[in-house]
Image 1: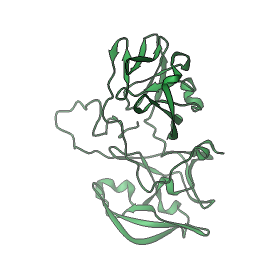
Image 2: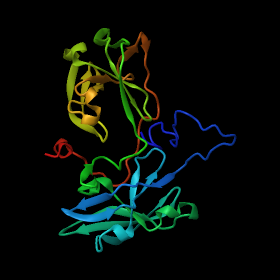
Image 3: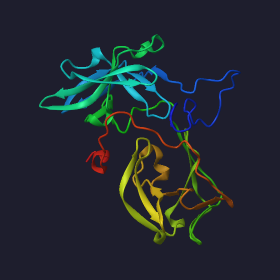
Image 4: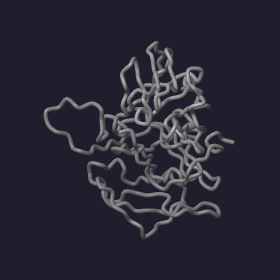
Length: 286
């Protein structure tokens, strides 16, 4: 989740509310210094290196890292005629990024007409995450988007009974499911594969990537597309869900202690900037 996406406190679909007498603005943006060294690699060269990155949280979007212009290598940013307008922060100027014998259009931007209340971002540049070769905190690559200090995952064992049904048959039944409490999400329930009728799962080609959990494999169930998923190689930090299976309650019938679960709203976010799809080999570093 983080602060402003999914159902976080600054999201337009937040789960809770602020206990204040007056209505809050419909959209609230939050900026803070990251307090981590972040670097950007492009065309096999380091093009930005800063300990003064400002992280911008916007409702419904992944957080975006803004680098001081002074911490971006000279000659990397080529001005263009392209400008757009940010709905809250004014005019945005776009750059082509060039290093070595490579260049990418619309690969960086700067907010050039900031209101006074957003002065923290003045003179800062953001790079389109997936247009770069990689972003790093110190020497470790960060995949997906800038790390959000407000994101948390807690995993708990439970003896409650989880049952999954599809078209009248039991697909899974477990008295030892695992519940994942992830900031901004409704609880997600995972069951051991031994408690799943794997003949009901049809593997789907393609995977998605979570920067906190790893690569997800998907499965169709009867006529329901991507009704289940599994992190077969979950990151060590969330290793307790490795290989377990979770089910979408809007695709199949998921019952917890006999009560049917429903998918909660506000579980989608909008990526920011130019996309470059990560493939499985890149995520695994192979």
